[in-house]
Image 1 (cartoon, helix red, strand yellow):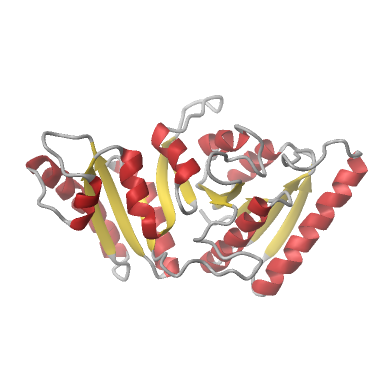
Image 2 (image 1 turned 90 degrees about the vertical axis):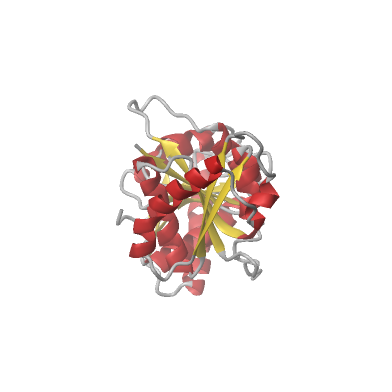
Length: 296
């Protein structure tokens, strides 16, 4: 993809955090940034009984303020704004056809409603044609407008490898590209269903002796990573194979992550959307931004 990084803002802390994350990502990738505000879609804490003209003016001021702040922090960034009456979900999905990345705000644990309301954010994540990232308000892995820097101990991009075939390629490409631009390392995580006697998740991370089944899966993961190691020789890689619930394995692995990358299968019909239970849980509980990458 060579399109812009698109972020939806609504004036909430989550939207502001998402905008700052998106601006840094766009600057790092050398891509333009598009700030989008839908004045017909109100955040949960904004009164809805406003006249149309007032909503439009408010939206225009919101975009102008965000643009000024981000241009001050990233003076070389190509930045545009868009004020629309189209509902937020539709506007984002339309832009996702040409975007390199969509960025959404999240209110925090237990909710992914901010720029988008209720299940709408999950709907966008489940249908977007490009990768989409959810950023939580006050996320310790994200620099914010108040001047609080990102936590210093976040130096990894975690990628969950559910399958080691072609479906993993878009995820690995996204993860290695993100790690390369950040000077971070990739932690490729493969969670296995318990097979015989398995060590606990923390033991896996500490490097216990693999069972035969785990060793076979580790070899498959190594083979899947080989072409990406060759393409990105400067990116350090950690391979982690663990038997246990995938959500628990990923949460443990993401302790020092600044970004976690998960996959989502494309669907043949635009009327169909679905996020798997692991991705859904990660969006609620992961201690860092989560990228959802569509794959065939």
